[in-house]
Every structure is written in structure tokens, then in C-alpha cells.
Length: 419
Ligand code: HSE
Image 1 (cartoon, rainbow, N blue to C red):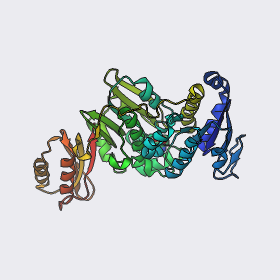
Image 2: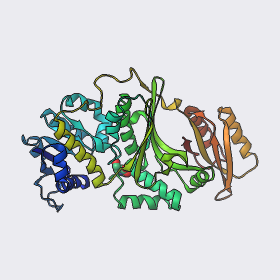
Image 3: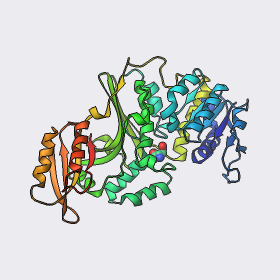
Image 4: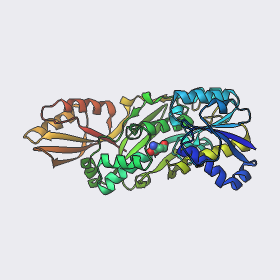
């Protein structure tokens, strides 16, 4: 029998307990042993969770319990969870976590501590989609050329509703929170941080790259308006928040931001709260993974799969999938060197000569226009909706700063990268 202690019995923890009970027959057949939850840690013992497992509010009751083989960490947060997980590993307990923020900051230290002790984290990226397994095991024969994905269900739900139904940003954010998709602090979702945590985990497995969230380009969806959506529709795009990892020669670029993508791409068709990740390997070509990235049962499905795996093998594979550095010395590409096509929305006073001045600034910054639209807007202003040919990030950023200072420009231009 394998005994489990769950630290943090919220939505996902409750689903873990229920799945282990509901599917006990197939789980023990697959694991080769029965798996039971011995106890769970909660903050508030007086709340009724309708569970039959013993609960405590003291994490040491689990960490010091010699009978517990596997600690499931679902408490969230970074530093406190880090201490708990370190203690569990040091006392020889296997660990399963869904905590992407913890891994975004501490995955390499945890790998060092875990060594031969199983440390699994399938639920930390894209909830129920077995993307970690796919990258670490299924695609392990490949150099990974790129990873590009919808990794935040809240943003995808919001963008789909804004695009397909014209719903306002604030209203739809509230709806995503009410449906339980969003993080406790939804800034993590709409600001791109949740997706960035997940991207960093995948990039470690694919490239062995040790970057922190602060090192990479992270932008959210907060500035996107119905004007941008109208432009997207007119030119055959959809707007999605994507996490992108791409290898070019000795460099890897990592970025999370809203993207305009052609509507006939597979990933453009993934709507609602679902996640979808495309991984391109040098031998296999493009592979695509689709499924629920949030929700109690979907996330718990991945947690329980990890517990079953631990029951089967008892020992871990290397936590990130490799023992020595992958692919030599890959470096993180500087954000300012990233190349892309860009879309800009510039709100200007509708006066003679404005367009000529803007065009000159594009030329001065070596940026070539691909398409342009002008739409009347509020208070005698106009929105210039411009897409560019491939340009360099630092040139675009400089140009945006320059344009924002012009007296006939009413607000900082909005920029969306075109993928
Ligand atoms: N808030 C996350 C999302 C949940 O919306 O995808 C899963 O990490």
C-alpha cells in the first residue's frame, strides 16, 4: 500500500481524494498497489469539505509521519511551499506538486535536492494535458525546435468571448473568476505570469535553460480592445495569449504575450478555457496537445497519474529529464533582439500631416509597414491600425516611445506581436 499526505486540500486536493476513491479499482491495477490518502493539511479545520480523510492544520503532522510515502503539495505560493517540499524530500518522501510558481523559481534547486527521490509535477503545466510526460519522455529523442502554446485558460476564455461575442474585458474577467478558472490574484492570469511560469518549466525540460520570470518578456492581455479585435478579424487573425519558446542556433527565446495568429492555424481554433500546446521536434515534426488546463478534476487527473507512476517505479527519472547539461551552452536570447512582425494601434488627433509624421518615424526606425487602416474614434480622433514587416524588438520599442511623445498622439500606442 502507498500512503499519501496532501498539503492543501482545496479544489484540486478534494478532487485528488475523490479520484483515488472513485477509480480505486483501475488505479490499484495500474499502480500494482492500493493508494490511500492518510491525511490532509488545511488552513481552516472548521470548514466542511465533505471528505472522509483525517485533516490537520499542522504540516509537520504529514512531514514527520514515517508512514507517509508521498507528499502532494497543493498549497500554492513560492517560499513557504519551497520549505515544505525541501523538508519532505530531505526526509525521503516522494513529492508531487501542481505548483508552477514554485517550479518557475526553484526547479533546479529542487532537482539537486531530490536526486533519486521521485519529484513529479505534471499538473503544474496545462492541468490535465500530459505535456511534461510528452516532452520529458515521449519526445526525448528530439532536439526541440519550438514550443508554442495557450497555457492560460482564463486568458483564452476571455479572448474567445471578446472575439466571438464582443463581450467587454471587465465583465468577462469577472465571469472567469466566478467560474473558478482564474488564480486567486487574477493579475497572474491576465498579466501573463501564470503562462510564463508554465513556459519556464517546459523550457527547462526542452533546453535545460535556467531562466526566472524576471529574465523573460512577459506581457498580458489588459490593453486589448474591440478595435484590435476588429483589425484582427479584418485581416484574418485571432488574438491569443501565447507562451513561446524557440531555439535558434545557440540561443533560446522565451516570451509570453498576446499574439495575432492566422485564424487557420490549429492553435487559433482552440477556444474557451481549453489549453493547447504545439511542440516541434527535429525528428518528429509538429505535435499538438489539447485539453483542459484548469479545473479540479482535470488537474487532479495529472496529480494522481504522478502518484501512480511513483507507486509503479518507486524511483524517479531525473526531475527535469536530464542528468547533465542539455545541448551544450544554450543562452537566453535578449528580449531586445527578438524579431517579429508587429501590429500597432495609435490614437491620433485627426489633423492634416499626422500620417506623414508617423510614416517618417517608421522610416527613421527602419520599420516597414505592411498594412494600414484608419478608423474614426472618439472626440475627433482616429485610430491608426498598422501592421509591420519583420522588425527587431528594440526598434519597435524605441519607435513606440518616440510616437507616444508626439503632441497629436493621445495615448501610448498599443502593440501586439504577429506570430
Ligand atoms: N489560472 C490558471 C488558468 C489555472 O487559467 O489556466 C491553471 O493553471
